[in-house]
Length: 347
Image (cartoon, rainbow, N blue to C red):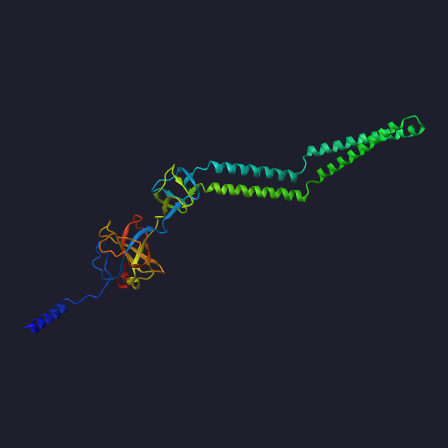
């Protein structure tokens, strides 16, 4: 009896297998994915998240301070290098003003050194030298007149000594004025000009440094795109020790999907492979794309779908899919990615 029951069971199992042949193992779509008419024709499936093509950029502060003004709101379009926030900067602005004043002073000193004396100063020196020449001539005549008189006893020695002293003094003054006029007419020495140029270069560097420091108080968008999230408001403090995020910017002109492929499915994907993307938010719709890049190293799973059957301790390989032009999806949307097998991709 036992042998008969076993034989009947074996025969029933064989007939069942013949009627319903076992299908080969294929990658299964994630639970909740939009219906694609079955998994047939897909090499692999994986969860993913939509992101801007150039990745989201988190803009942070380079300085410590308080936000004076926020210049953007969420969903605003911004150009590359456009200011999005200004940190209170009156102290640094004063440093820049001081540096600019020092630069102006150094430049004026250089100009003065290069240009030399003014025409008025040259004329004044010439006139003073001519005046001394006239005085010296008179002093020489006075001395020449008193000397023979002293020798004949008609004039005192003291008078002659006074005339000699006056003559000698005028000769010294005339020599000094002649040297001064020569310096004025010759211009500054090369060494003095070099020193003045160095002072200008130093002042200019200090002004540029002050300007660079002041520029850090204006927080700018690194790329052209849209303000995806505004993370701070005017009046809030920021720091650069643990850089304070101000906003998140992304270029939504083109989109891509960052997918995490299970390590058991990485043999079914390749760069250039066509991909279909589905989202619970758009039931019954599929969005096309092309696999653009595959990571070289496996890592821990980062994208969480929140589905009950999801495994969180699996090793995955990140894959970047460029969505077709014209596809519009919100950044951060969780999606299901289906990597098409060659037969389906070429149809």
